[in-house]
Structure formats: C-alpha cells, structure tokens
Image (cartoon, rainbow, N blue to C red; front, side):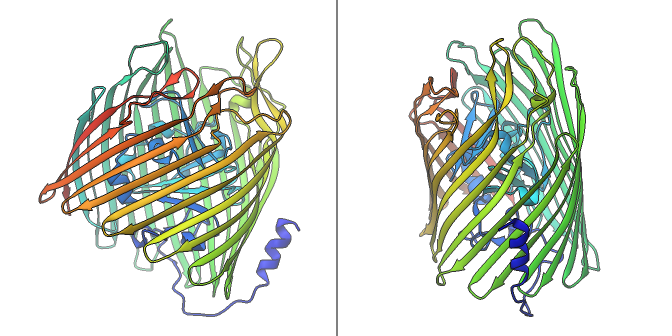
Length: 607
C-alpha cells in the first residue's frame, strides 16, 4: 500500500470530541517533562511523550547535561542507542555522527528547529556546538524525511537552548589537563509575558596529539553565545527571536581553520481558533571556515548559507491532530574553490496525521520535495501503536527517506586527488521498525529492531586515474537491534544502552566503513547529601577504516568518573576525569584521541 493510501486509511478513523487541552499557544514543552517519559517535539513536530511518539527517541535532559558537563556534544552522543561517533582526534576535530549505520551526512542536526550543516561537505558542526549553552537534546532514530525532507535518513538530533520558564542564572569557571580552561555565564527567566535566556561561554585548550606519528599538540578554542526572547501576546499568540553563534580556531596536522557557525531565527505562533494553530519560522544558518595551510601559508575558504521559511498548520480534531505545512530553503556557497553551481533551492509541502482510537495510535505523513539540483522526491511514513496494557506499548513503522548529494559531491572541480560527480543520484531508503516499550514507576526500557534498505548509497571511490570521486552503490542494507533503559531509585539515576547492527554493502558484501557492529553505554549518578558521584562507561567493537575491509581498527572501552559537591549556598564544585584507564584508541586510522584528562569546575547558581 502506498504512503498516500495509508494516510487516507488513518484519516477514516473515528474522531472523538473531548475536553483534551491542546498546545495551541505553547509548543515549548521542555519544562513539563517527566524524566522517565519526557515530552518531545522532534519526532512529530508536536508535543508528545516518548511513549506516545511511536518512534525511537532518546532525551538528554538538563540534569544529564549539568552533571556530565562534556566539552563537546559528541561525548554525550557516543554510545547512545543506535548512535556511533567518529572523530579525527579530540577537541574540535572533524566529527561524524552515524545513526543506525547511516552516513554522517544522513544525520540531520537542528538548533531550535533550524537545520545547520555545511552545504559543501554536508557535515553538521558537531565538534563546535557547545553543550554548555544547551538545556536538552532529543535524538530521534530512524527516517524522518517525510516531515524534515532531505538528509534525515538515519535520524534527527535537535538541540534546545534554555526556555526561560524558570528563573535561573549561573557563572562558571574551570580548568584542567592539556592547558584547558573555560568560563561562562548565563541567565534565563520570565518577566510578565516575556521569556528570555542569554548565555556565553569560552573554552580553550592547548590540545593533544591527533596523529599517531605526530607528537605535536593541536589546540582548539571556541567562543560562543546565544540569546532568545519569546513574547506572549494578549490573544495567546507568541513571537520569538533566536540568535546562536560559535566561533574559534582548531589546529590539525596540515594547518588550522578559523570557523564561524551561526543561527538566527524569527518565530511566530498564532492560534486562529481553539483548534487551529499556525507556526511560522524564518531562519538563516551560516557555516563559514577559513583554512590556512601549515606548509605554504595559503588560505582557502568555504562559506555556506541556508535561508529557510517553514509554515505549519496544526488542526486539533478531538483525538486527532493534522499538521499541514510547507517549507522553502535556499543553499548558497561562497568559496575560494570555483564550483560549477553555487546555489540551489528546495521547495516542499507535507502533511501528517496523528490519531488515537481506543488502545490504538496511528501516525501517517507524506512529503513532496522539489530540488533545483536533482528534481522531485516523495517520501512517506506510517506507524501503528498498540497499548498492550497500562505499561507496555507495541509499535511498528515503515518509512522512506532520501539524502541529497552535497555541493562537493556534485560540483567540486577536478583536482589530482578529488573530483565531484554531477551524475550522482540521491540516496533513497526504505526502513522498517518493530519496537516495544515499557514504562514503570521508577524505570523504563525500550527495545527496537530495525531493517533499512538503501539504494544509490553515496560513497567515495578511487578510480584508475587515482582520483577519488563520489559514486552510487546500488544497494546497501543495515539491520540491527537497540535497547535503551533507565530509572531512578533512592537518589540513584541510571541510563543504559546497547546496540548490535550489521551495516552492509550488498554489492561487495563488506561492512560499511567506520561503523562499529556493537556498542554499549552505562551512565550512573548517585546523590549523597549535598554531593554526588557518577560514572559513564562506553564500549564499542571493532570497525573497518576502509570500504574494502582490509584495515581493521580494534574496539575499545572507556571509563569516565565525576563527582561534585554543593559546599555553600549557590556554590558548587565539580571534578571529572575522562578516559580514566588512559585508553589509546582510534575510530579513524592513525587519528588518536586524548588519553586520561581531568577538569575542575567552580559554579555559582542564582535562583
């Protein structure tokens, strides 16, 4: 049955008039979270608890961010269910996030609903996004192209800044190994009908070596800031403005890069009636970088800009919610490298229906994209959920997705080492998932089995002339199982994750490069009076560095310890020791990550 047919089928389910409160003028719901079954918005463009979203979702909340206090977002994502992270070294070095074995370009990163990535490489700036400015992170696993369009093949990661629903301020300073130091401050709160949040942070490190054959430290610094204001009007409407910027410098083996990543957005929410809400977002995201060669001193730059307009209509019909919308975005490239094309437009229309009838939930979505570079793509998704009893819910879903070739893939001019391929086709995929979730008073667990078939997988291959070019692999298959669990009991908070999968190139029979087959993660934090102790343990199996599966990289296990104490009113201190066992490991051949290192933080909280 086609996605359109499934959509029409769900539309025939009976509607029930009820007194359910609808989030007409309040789409910002992070402040209403239940820690074990939190409310999320990324999975369905609307507020639903994780158990009701009919998809696999992991939430990293404010408490986890505060207690773990990672220097980079990738540290939090590594080992989460279905998530793998590969980087070219520690502290601001190139990072890819793979969800369910799909490529890093197939993971969509949003900041408050705004997509941010390099239009030339397709990579999101994971290594430059400071967790210190965030309030929560939602990780949605599985295709979401039917509501977000291109590049959401593996999944979506959305980062949220403080909402301002609660008054709080903070000042923080810290320092540690590798000449690292950090300082930052922020405040969020509400004044009448105005919510606001503002924060700034600076982190600097002399770095550590990143290549096995190079003992020179490679430094990194990052200065970042954000501001958000939301004004609620007398008629229930809301208007908001968001600014987010991070800039700095990262050093690598052959040179260094000055980077700037920036997001700006205007948002509006207008309740037309009690059952009709309009959301509008106008945004711009910039990804700029200037690289200086260590050997020649020559500079090259790649600046990309994405301007977007998104318009959603939410219609609340008893136990049903219908979302109909459209989106337009334009990518522009300004570079020292002359591309055959330097801009492209994408226009889209989409619809999603969420429905409930007794013990059954249903979701159906359909999206049409028209891209200037490669034409039209239609994607769809359908999911059913069945409440087995008050605590257990079974779900099944099927979805299609696609990944658009990047400017580098299509238009990069021929050089002795690399050339673009204007004949590339978009990646397309069909994914099926079966999941079972259990929610108890003090714990939850979620088990998911997935199978993903990918056609025209985009990979880089070296030709007979020695030039590396992107090409389409006819078939790839990724299948696996994920388990996530967590709970809270007598001051002990725990989260656990395990993933086993087989990402396979079906043409060659080889495993897709740089993907681990198995991964586990455990996070424990225990309160002891005014103090806490905690640990994070991450383990991953071997992976292959190359597509031919000739270069095998060993698996590894990492242990991180942390402790903290509130020693006076408003004052606290925290000590973390990362990679306690001083494990030397590689996730990219010859690129080594930092050994054991410690960081001490002093913080003042005002509430």
